[in-house]
Length: 389
Image (cartoon, rainbow, N blue to C red):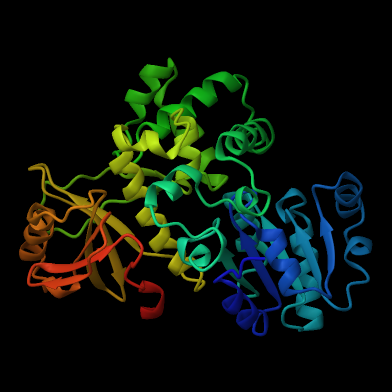
């Protein structure tokens, strides 16, 4: 088993809260992780029909007999269970008694907010990070390997080729998970929507434009996008709204939680095809942003990430806000360092009055440098924001 970086924080807060919740994409390793961390706990999956039926019909009997603690997998399937867990948590006053997992983020969090506020520690588990794989047999020297394969655990521990894994993953997601959130009458249109989203990684979302290509209205596009967010398939990177310039872009940018999924949707068949693919730069940007995001999630912290762009074309790919201090980051897939990589950072730092020592260029090469215009980091030596929070 690959050691997950989030483990230490989960165990720490399980000693301080009666309920621990772990959400994340389907097959990100949630069940494997919590069963390894809490080996003596009773385990129940609510994807198992008899278990779900018992939880729905007789919650008290379902929760009986968990003296050593209980893991409830996919807990969002029986939302009324959360109220009973609240009562037991308040009666027993035992920390770490309940461990809940879920792969439908918004549905899961809605029930937690309603019933378990103040009693639960919330974690988001994404697929493997590069750092988690670095010292394993699956560590790689070329970032294209990770762009193409992504980081879902089953790919690695079962030795499944990416072209075999992702089509099946997508079929499971669209036919099971997406349909559970909303009634999808036209699966083919939704799958086409997924492909259009893949082709727009790193771009500002335009609901009307996507709707025109699909032949649906912008409200349908917005609803479908919310489905992808609910299932931890995509996330929106919001613009930074500080009034440094009134002509800033006010629409979010679209990214996926895993680039292997994007490559599959784009029809990329091997890592070598990335060298001349139009989406390589956007995929690299997506990869770096999610790797930095994992650092925060693995500390149990919601990252404060933004992008910045004005109408004049000046842009910063990523702003990381740590305690109110901004760290601008420019992300470039090229392996050769170019002075122009710093142009966006220079403009933003001057506008915002920031010291360049807090800025970074992260690129596809191998050099680590400290320059007057900012710091340079290669793709496999990212700034460790997780230790700064």
